[in-house]
Amino acid sequence: MKFGLIGAGNMGGTLLKAALKKGFLTEKEAIIYDVNDTQIAKFQSDYPVKAAENNVELVKEADVVLLGVKPVFLGGVLEEIKAVSGGKALISIAAGWSLDMINDALGEDHSAMVMRVMPNTPALVGEGYTAICEETSFTEEWIEWARAFFACSGQFATIPERLIDAVIAVTGSSPAYIYTLIDAMAMGGVKLGMPRAMAVQAAAQAVLGSAKMVLETGEHPCKLRDDVCSPGGTTIVAVDVLKETGYESSIIKAMTACAERNREMTSKKV
Image 1 (cartoon, rainbow, N blue to C red):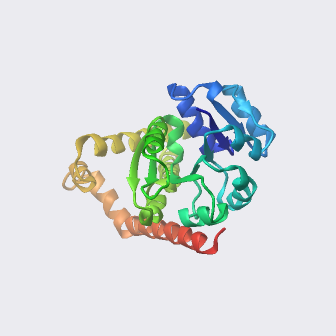
Image 2 (spheres, rainbow, N blue to C red):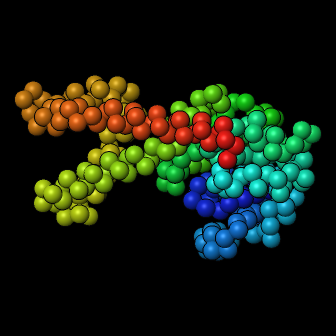
Image 3 (tube, helix red, strand yellow):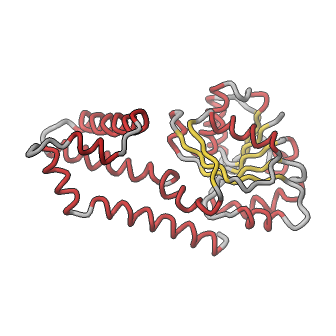
């Protein structure tokens, strides 16, 4: 079996590295291509996999291909490879590209198998979350392969494609919300006298620990929050300020805007 990666950037490269690190794939089983030679060299400095000369060569050689390019470039890649994609298993991680759009771009009579997934960047540290659309032309054997592949980088779930907008808002884009929170907490710590590096580490650990408590205790987040808020104490005052300043509503508004943008991208066929 040969795995091909088109677009060896942050997301695609991370997913392949996770599979290699776990031993799910070997270096001899992988082939990559990126229009940016620097990206290829950067990847090969960690894992000396074969690099293809172009997208067509890669697809011809591979059995399964992860399309790791940005949404704006996916149409061009699909046009380039459609003539050689017959019988191949193609996995797209592009926001804004529905399965129907991908199939249309490949042409009416194409015989490629297509799957759409939405991973996120915490896959880099083995804590990713990948949503796999249940609407797929993959065979059962290939579906099981895909699940095992994405398990290398964290958790995965199977969802109907109609939920992809929500998934992008909740997991695909959400690391950016958390990084913004950590930065704000760190700035608050600096304002209160903590060294910047110490404040960043403390804030990041607080987020990590809090998330782990939600996952491992099974308690509702509000219950865990209330457990921290002693009557008349310091935490309840802080939480009250967050509510007064629209903390929760701003997060919900941001996620709604994120989902709406994905719908807009899909309708415009970026």
